Amino acid sequence: MRMLVLLLLICAAVPARAEAVLDHIREAGVLRVGTTGDYKPFSFRNADGSYVGADIDMARSLAASMGVRLELVPTAWGRMMADFTAAQFDIAMGGVTNLPDRAAKGVFAHTIYVDGKRPIVRCGDAGRLTSIAAIDRPEVRVIVNPGASNEAFARAHFGHAALTVFPDNATVFDEIAAGRADVMVTDGIEVDHQSALHKGVLCPAAVQAPFTRLEKAYWLQPDRDLLAVVNAWEDREVETGQWKQDLDRAMAAP
Image 1 (cartoon, rainbow, N blue to C red):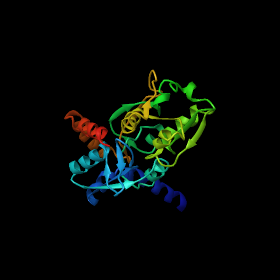
Image 2 (image 1 turned 90 degrees about the vertical axis):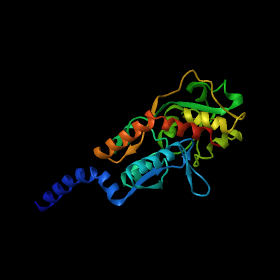
Image 3 (image 1 turned 30 degrees about the horizontal axis):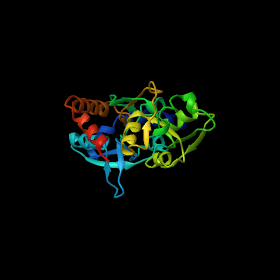
Image 4 (image 1 turned 180 degrees about the vertical axis):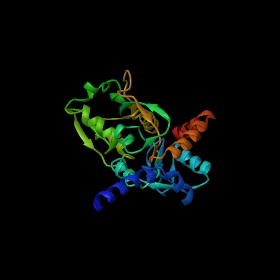
C-alpha cells in the first residue's frame, strides 16, 4: 500500500515539473539552448569555441527577449534525444527537424523553415546521381553523419549502396570532395550552402524534387507557457524580417 501511494505521488508530480520549465528559466536567469555546432548555416562551433549561425543569432534574440542569459549547451545528433530527455537543456536549436519521436518527448514551436532531403555530389556527378534508384547501387559510395534523420533516411533507402557513417558532420563533405565518397543525402539548405562553400567541386544533384518534406522548428521541453512565449517571439522575428536577415547572413558566411 505504501508503495502504491508513493507511485501515485511520483506520477502526480511529473506534470507539475514538466509545466514549470519557464518558471525555472526565469528563476535561474538562464536559457539553456542545446545545439550541435556542426550544421551550417544554422549552428556552427568555431575552433575557438564560439558559435555562429542563424539559429545562434535567434537563440541570443530569444534569451534577450526573455531577459535572461543565454547558455549554449553542446550536444550531438546521435545523443540529442538522450540529452533532451535528461533535461540537459531547455530548448534545442540549430536546424532541428520536427520528428515524431522527438515530438513524443517535448513540444515544437512554429515551423521556422520548410526543407527536403536532396543529394550533394561532386559536380561531375550532378546529372548522374539524381534519384534514389540511381544512388542505391553497389558501386555508389554513400556517406552520412551519425544519428537523426540523415542516417535514418540512408539506412531506409540505400540498402544496396556502400554506406559509410562518418563521425564528423562538420567535415563529412570534404570526403566527397576528396573522392573518398560519392554522395550524401541531407537537408536541401545544407546542400546549397556546402555547394557554395565548395564551389566548382561539390554541386546539388539535379533531382526533379526533394526526396522528402521536412520542417525545421525549435524543440522545447514540455511547458505550455514556454511554448506560448517562444511562439510569440518567433512570430515577431519572422514578421519583421529578422529571421530572414539572420538566415541570409549565415548563408553568405564562409
